[in-house]
Length: 213
Image: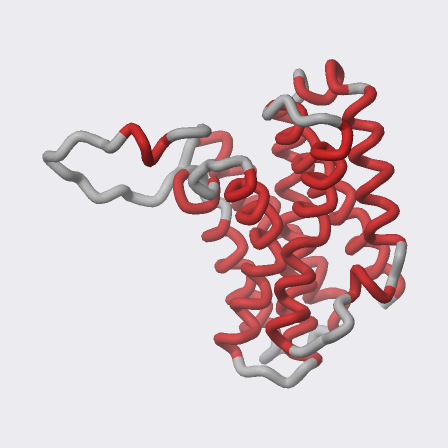
C-alpha cells in the first residue's frame, strides 16, 4: 500500500501542475496560482471523501497533499515560461495522473463498502472533480464535458477495476493495470482526437456559453 500512497502523491503533484498552469494562463496572481494548484491537486479526493463519509478528508489529515500542491504552484509560478510552453507534455503527465486517481477512487470506495455504481462515481469524482471546480472558478464550461476522452477514460478504467475484482489479483496489480489502461486510452484519444458525439442543432451556439474558454 505504500507504493499506492506514493502514486497518490505523484498524481496530486501532476494535477497541481495542470491547475497552476491554468492559473498562469488566466493571469492570476501568485495566490491564485497556488489556489488553483491545490484545487485540482486535492479537490477531487476531498469531494470523494466527503461523499463516502471518509472525514476528515485525507488532504486535512495528511499535510503532504497540501504541501505538495503549494510547492508545485510556487514552482510553476516562478518558472511559468517553461511550463506553459510545454502544455502537450503536461497533458501526457496528466493522463497518468488520471489513471492513478481513477484506481485510487475505486479502491477507496470499495474499502468503505459502497456498491459498484458508487465505486465508479468515486473513480470519476477523484479523477475529474478538482478540474471541474477549477473550470467553474475560471468561468469556463468544465473541460470534461466538452473535449477529449477524459471523464470517459476514467469511467472505463473504473469498470475495468470492478471486473478485475472477479479475478485473483491483489489490490496493487489491479491498481497498476487500471492506471496503465486509463493512461493508454487517454493518450490514444489525444493522438487521434477521439471525442464523444455532440448533438446537432440548427440553432446558433450561444456565445455566452463559451465565455472564458
